[in-house]
Length: 228
Image (cartoon, rainbow, N blue to C red; front, side, top):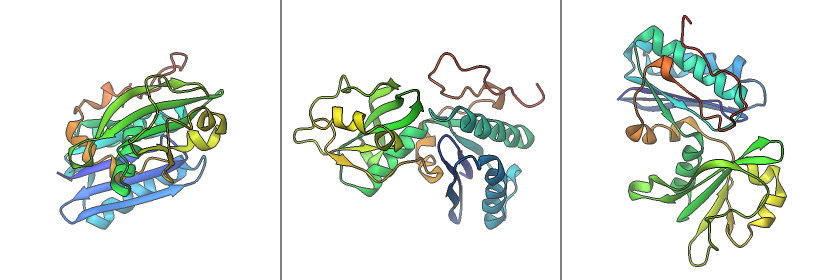
């Protein structure tokens, strides 16, 4: 399948295109630059593959949880591309993509991902390694304070890693879970190329039905569909 993957849920702006020739990608970690970077990056990967949006099979969206503004940017761009080209959108967890990269690049059995949610909290979820290094949910994504992670026992013989910027942003969270996470992964932000394998298990939905995974109930309106 020819899939365009987009993720701006974190400090990273990341785009990847899966096509017959392989994967073309662009990935930059620059705070507050998503609006400037995203469309040129999309044009670059499509141009590299000599494809137009109408040649794609779907758009894969890194759907958070993460930055409210970042998720709105990616959702709006994905909606615009999909609507214009008559495509569907496949929403994928941005945090699961972090876990997928950790499994690909390490020998850990489990990974606990934490991303900065501000206000002293993180978005937290845990995954175990499945067949073909596919992340399998161990703990569902939730908002979490700087306290021990309930439902996560001591690591014991399990090789468990902590990934995501949240652990770095809140050292107290790491200190409270020293007996639960034995290793620190260098993977901090989602990379779009790692969304692509996860799309096989994602639903294909109409652009207007996209609902970013904000997790906070206080967030205002989600992005409206094109033309609304």
